[in-house]
Image 1 (cartoon, rainbow, N blue to C red):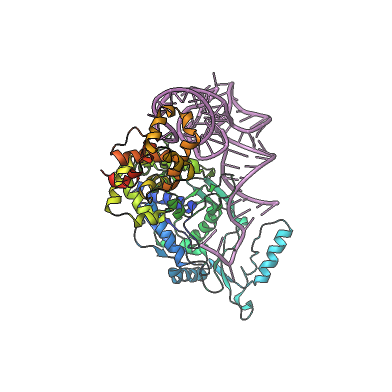
Image 2: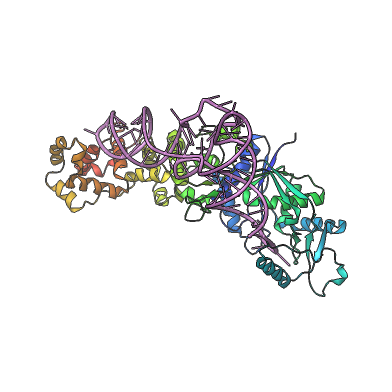
Length: 473
RNA sequence: GCGCCCAUCGUCUAGCGGUCCAGGACGUCGCCCUUUCACGGCGAAAACACGGGUUCGAGUCCCGUUGGGCGCGCCA
């Protein structure tokens, strides 16, 4: 058995959205699983909509997700000469023919089909007409002379055997009137030339597989193994939209998700391995198989992604997490500012705070928020109530209050709350996330956090200026 | 409209004819741990879309209904 060759073939008309990322992931996994090759092909034949910015975004997204492709990324547009060459061959062999039908004629066909409740189908009017009848000055398109009888079978690894009646498949366009290849032709030629053995893609391509099979057969080429994976839907079951999560993967990076967590979440959307939920990348590679992919579409669920991310964060080594955070800083809200202030001393303090912080953060964004106290400007301005408390006796006053505050109900007292809030707001952190890192920073210990630690610090204004200074390993 | 695909807790799913009064995970709700917030532990509510078959026996096979999705371009 020869080695598997898979490919990811995005069109650069936008960012790498989450569905595309999952398709890439499955191709990558399959190649890794069976010791094969994972190729990248940019489908940029639509010159109007393709942009270099989109290409860059896609490469960057794949790179961030850790899905590294083998060899150079191939530009489909750059292979147009080859596509034309193949079409010439088909023309010569009679597998294709020139069609001079005008846009108006096609529109008429479409209109009529709709009126009669039929799907649009080219009627083959130039299929057997002599080229000498061609209207002068009209550039023809080249169409496939598809078999009209019988059926075309797509033996899909995920969907099973899917049978299409050939009468439902018309003579598709291979070459446009301007001489440029269509997607349908280019895909077939490129997959063949690249030696692609397994085509794994969204099941919105299932009917295309039938059409492409016809082209493969017309060319006498071996048809690749198909695997059409179900699409991801939004929380409401409708097609994934921007509002749902059809965001570029860079948006997930900005939301503070770890690549490994996103991979784990994405692969479990439609694929399963018994009851196992969490996988290291090696474990997924070892367990992955097309046969375990489900056939029904699944909905994207941020809550589960977030939970999963929390698991990965806690499972990360402190140094590893620290590095991930620093590397992601440029993309996180407020991150660039922090990155700017990250001198050696701040790095050490941040590193020291990670163990306490990571227990309660589900994303890198929350991790950064939790570390906010390290980066605020001190002394912290106090609001009136807070100032009032301090004015009444500061630390001593607070100490006197402590016994009364040993129960949760007490710390909702307005004055106390004001103090804590003032601190939390200033440090840009959530109330709960303030205590432990502060304690850790002050004492070098990371256990027994308490709101009272915060209060005692607040009671000593002179300490505020030194919080950062006293932190460290 | 035509073609194709799909259908187990709110969500992701296990289940490949009997061991399923349906298991796991997220979410939700209790309780425990905790001088905050998390983490963790224990527990609860929560599903086989509907109707016919086949079979001694169906979540598991077949048909239909309903519901959802995808496709139907000189886009990819």
